[in-house]
Length: 365
Image (cartoon, rainbow, N blue to C red):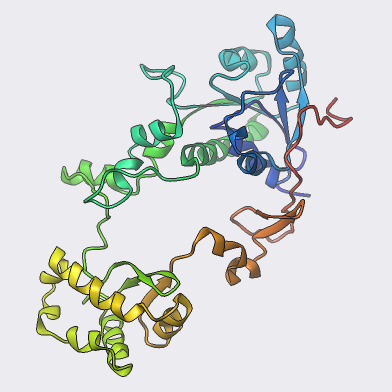
C-alpha cells in the first residue's frame, strides 16, 4: 500500500497543473488524464521529454465534454474521485463551483497564471511572464547583468508543487470531516512565495534585494573555471581554515598565486569586497585551477578543509555517485528517468510511461 493508494484524481491540467498530478501518481494515487477527442492543448507537448516527465504513471481517457451533456458525463466520473485538477483555458474551468455544489466532498484544485479573481485573472501568460511578474527574474543572475529567466519551465514546477501541497492538506481534511475544498492556486503567487527572504527584507528594512545574493560579497565566494568545468569556492576571512588551506595548497605546489595571496591587502576585509579584489582573485585562482580537474580540486580541498564543490552539469547528474547510490534515476523504456526527490521507509516509488491518448483501463471505462 502506498500513501495515496485508493485515491482517484481526475487531471484536466495542460500546463501549470500537470506536475501536481505527477506528484500524486508517484505516491500511489490513480491519476487519470481526462481529455476531449483530439486531446488537451498541452503546452508541455512541445517537447516529448517534458510531456513524459509530467505525465508518467498517469492513465488517460477521452471524454466528450461539450455542452450540458458533457458536463454531466464528467460529473458522473467525478463521483468516483476524491480530487479534480482544473486549469485556466482547459475544460470546465468555469464550472468549479458547480462541481462543489454537486459533490460537496470533492477537492477541486484550480491552477492558473494569476488566480481565479483580480484584474490579471484572464491575462495571457507564459513561463517568462510568470517568472517576471512573480519577481524571480529580478533575483536571478548577476547584478551587473539583466534579470535572468530560470530555465526549463520553472513556473509550472513551482505552481504544481504548491498545488499538490494544498491539495494533499485538503484531501486529509475532506477525509476527516467529509467536506471538500476549492483550492485556488496562482502561479504568480507561488513564485513570489519562493523568493527566499526578499519580501521580508523590503518589509523590515525598506531595502530591495538584488541579484547576486547577500552571501557572496567576498572575492573568493563565486564560481570559477577549471580544467574540465567549474567549481564553487568560499574562502572568506570568516572561514580562516578555508582561506589558509587554499593559500597553503598553492604554496605547497609551488604555484605563484600562493605568494601573491600572502600580500597584506588580502587581510583587508573591506577591500576584498571590491570589484578590484574580485578581478584580482579570479585571475590568481583560475591560473591555479586551469591545470586541475573538478575531482582533483575537490579531493584536495576536502583534505585541507577548503569549502569547495564541483558545479554539476546536467549531463553529469545521471552518473553522480550520490544520486546513483540513492537510486534517484530509474530505467523507463530504455532511458534514465528522474524519480521523486524523497525516500520513504516503504518502497513506494513506481513509474510507468506517460499515457497515449485514449489509453483507458477497464476499471476507468
